[in-house]
Amino acid sequence: MPRANLSPDALTRAALDLIDTDGPGALSMSALARRVGVQTASLYAHVRDLAALRSAVQAAVFAELADAIGDAPTLRDLANAQRAYAVAHPARWAMISQPVERNEITEPMASRVSALVVGSLGAYALPEGETVHAVRFASATIAGYLALESATSFAHRDEATDASWNRALDALDRALRTWTPEDPA
Image (tube, rainbow, N blue to C red; front, side):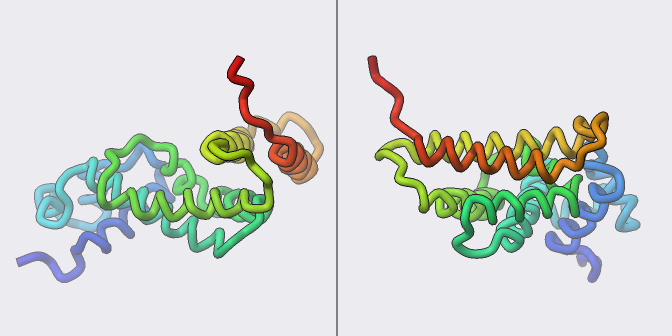
């Protein structure tokens, strides 16, 4: 009979706590078992394997992120919500870019965030067929800035990063307002 305190949800929450403390690279079945006070083999009654655990953790992070973003944001609102989440939960934010097997656990939550990103581009008159490219561009710009900020790559300067962040968002806005399809020639 499974322990009362062990369930897939409880293990996902414990895994989130583990990565908050020790970073995404520390997530393993044995580390999780130690954290919840059971033998590693006991976890397999609740989670298939490490890949399934990583998928569940990533899905939980996407759900938290979608909740943090909220409904129908502007691109700036979305970017600021992502930045606030990345600052508040750096290890969880890092889980978004960790490779996981795409499956029924992760897909709905990742799709929810993707839909919010697409929705945030609604103010831009993107040419037909260009949304996917604009989403990739916006996502790469935001994620790239946040990755550099998280790695303290800007720490060698005295200036606060807020001004640079706002300039990056202004440049992203200008690029999207003037977006044109690629010339097929």
